[in-house]
Length: 146
Image (cartoon, rainbow, N blue to C red; front, side, top):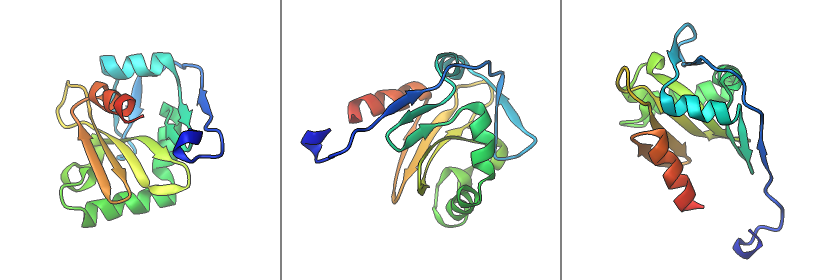
């Protein structure tokens, strides 16, 4: 990382797995059952910190989706970003998967585009966005990006 100009260390913290049967959505009374890929992800770790990025545990998903700054940006995407996940899909089809600490406009969604299928992963980082057909394609992109 020093070769890239970072003078500080980026820490990774992977919390122990906990049993997860479903994940919440932005619709507070709607949860989605785990798919095989999500089940494998949660069997590996509850949450996953890498630098400022956090892939949320199921419990953290609930608390982060209730945060004022997350809700504000979620609503802003719905109202102003043509084709964004919140504009295209209702809240019961959206789960907050990841955030960047202290950067409320960086949100990663699980998008339940089709019932009984792996969710898509849509990322918003400032003015950039990326869409992935599955958690697997998102993880491959992350590995290639690093």
